[in-house]
Length: 188
Image 1 (cartoon, helix red, strand yellow):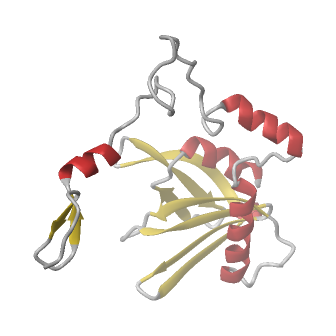
Image 2 (image 1 turned 180 degrees about the horizontal axis):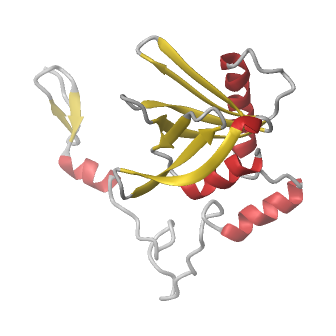
């Protein structure tokens, strides 16, 4: 016969579980107002402190100490998109600097969802859909009209580009048309 102490109860699988009373003692929650060593001392509670991760002054102090400030990961994302831009548009010179990129859809018979790349001399669109690549390169000197447009007649999330050859390109589903339009106008 096997003897166990009072805190162990045999399980049907041969394992031993702790009794409910022992488990309750271990799971007792601590109040934020009580120190860990026991109850309140003389009825005086120590003040609660904010953690350093939530404290905004802490992050600014650490930034000043290191002297390093990241703007928003936007530069690293632009560098990644620049690599994709040059990989997709090999016809453009390697010196062509990417200014900005936006997720959008080229409105045709079927909307092609892809990325709009804006450089100093070109507005380019790239989409890879159903193992088919769709590329559009619009030289900035051929753009005759650049205007804000609406999709579904009332949703203000598109820009329209008309070239001197009378080609019309409508890029919709822009997250922020008000950011995209000045970037596109800058390269013209």
